[in-house]
Image (tube, rainbow, N blue to C red; front, side, top):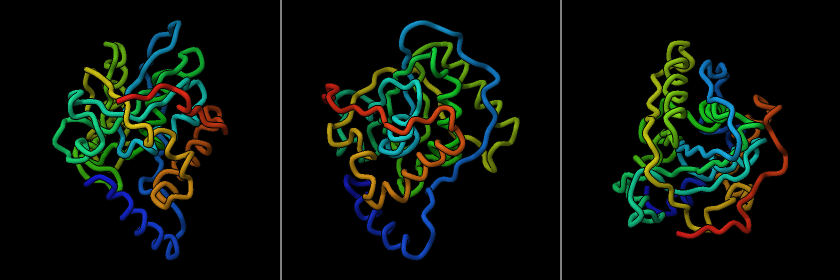
Length: 232
């Protein structure tokens, strides 16, 4: 989609809100926990996940216990094309992504993936998510270690075998080459604009689903980027 086309979607969502009950563009799915899990480790770990518009992905993980930071950005392309307007062309190889730094003593990589596949997005939508269309909105897991790759691939196979979804999972797993933080105005977007129709219609329900389905992993006060150095 073209830059800022979400404003048009927001207007349409506002109109729909008067005609139908508020619900997320992608419904949450109750799924089993991963049968293969990452080993316990010391120090912070990093996960990079892409599941459509990064506003909602970041918002969900900012409300997840054990997450130290969640930064919206771009992964899959080069530094030269890592800006919103260029990525929005859908020709850069980038996916709108979120870099999640987490404490493995408080939350596991597998639990993050369970939340990702359950409430963050619909992993059966190819090169789109809800109202957003293009390869930049694809479902992807960018792994930072061989163990993450093993856990992610095993979990996808597990969910497919369990027939957790009506359609095949299209999520791609690949090694992270680089992550580029998005522009400052994209950070903490869900928290700063909770009543913006796009956020209210597509993303706030995801946070509510996190609270409902993963109550033990939900925190009311989000972990915001705020004073973090976000440069691009």
